[in-house]
Each structure stands twice: as C-alpha cells, then as structure tokens.
Image (cartoon, rainbow, N blue to C red; front, side, top):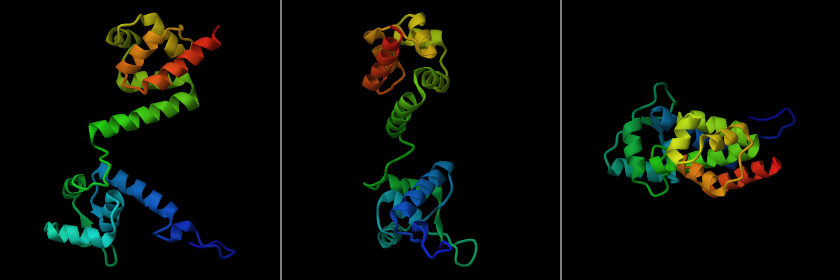
Length: 187
C-alpha cells in the first residue's frame, strides 16, 4: 500500500494506530455477525499480544482450525472465541446488555446533538417501538409534552423531560438540557 510518490499508507503497517482501529472494528463486527475469528482478531478484542493468545488457547485446549486456503490464517469457532473472550479482563462484551445500553445512550446523545431534537426523538421513538401515547403512559406525562418533543417544540417542563429521559434510558442530564434548549428557542 504505497502511493505513486512513495508514501506508505498507515494501513500497510499492521501495528499502526489506524490499522489497529480498523481491524478491531472489523473483528467486533465479525464477532457480532457470528463469524469465526483469527488469532489477530482475538488479540485485538482481548487487548493482548498474539503469542499470549496462542499460549492461552493452547493451555485451554482450544483448537484453531486451519485456514481454508494456503497462507490464510487459522480461525477459532465464534462461540468458543466468545466464551474465551468473556473471561478476559480487556474484553468489552458487545452482547452484554449493559454495554449495549451504554452504547445506545452514547449513540442517542450524539444523534440529539448532531441532528436536533425532532429528528433524533423520532428515531428514538421508532427504535423503542413506542407511540407518543405509549411513551406518555410509560413516563407518566401528558401526550402533548411527548408530541412537543417529537416536533422539536417541547413545553418547558424539567420534570417531564427527566421522566421521558428515564423511561427511554437516555443520558438524562443531556436529554433534559437539549429539551430545555429547544423549549427556550420557542419563547
């Protein structure tokens, strides 16, 4: 991976920060899809070195299947790999409900900041499979308040915004702040 003028791409070096980030993201994607993982992918997900991975797999009698073609790296069955990874201190489990909740809160925080209240709230409602009335009932607020959030023109009510944020398991202070900003724009 080299440009015409001789500059080598950071993607050519497997230890470059750029390549490690991309390969780690790809390994996580493969794990979530249910694909078998290579030793390198296990090393990236467990925050360990490849020789340490090989030693650990060997010590636990975990078999590495040979690659399908010559020169292709061997793989570990995804279910076996996932069980092994869960025992590792450096592993962030994408299947863990709390990890999913943290990731979802972060995603929604970004969505609210970048796309605005009306768009983001509509996406959040859709993902939660809730109607305005369903969410109002769940949070114990008036449907008119929820509808105001959906249109990006909420009523200024800190308590109702807090209850909605909690009902949707959002980053409540962030959500309330965005709702207040939107309500103040309407005055």
